[in-house]
Length: 206
Image 1 (cartoon, rainbow, N blue to C red):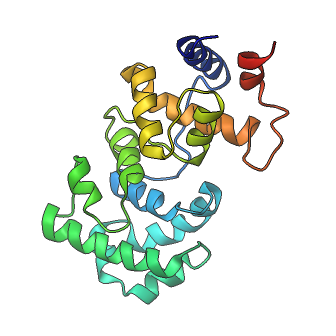
Image 2 (image 1 turned 120 degrees about the vertical axis):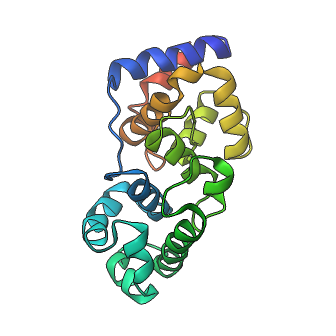
């Protein structure tokens, strides 16, 4: 099976499994999405969704977040890993949004990635899921599965993202990256043995 055929198989099977792709992180607008994604680093989406209702009730806008002290933000997100750093980033992120962008989340990678706590993956999620721009955010599930499916030889997520964008049509990027994440969690978890990973078996069984 060629790389192109493997890519087509991935699209076909994931469309069967996940015809709709709800965004895993609860949010109401691009700002709350960006905060939720920033909080999700080294933390499960489930845990973030447990914490953000109380956070957003108090600080669901940059204006309100900027008024809180770091220790107040930390208290609201203390169940999440790296809460000290994330609290500091959320406060400064809100301040810079107000200083540079009138409190509105910008719509360019350069401006997003200049905000504390916003790396390329977070910016890509905001661009794709918040604003609808074609993007292919690569997390550990996608990097692992793209490598496992021999769709990339990327040594890092940057190379994997480049290969994914070259392999798959732009119009499916926003949906497909979520489908691969869902598949990884359900059928091929990092700590599992891959018994349920039927896509890999279909590709490479003799």
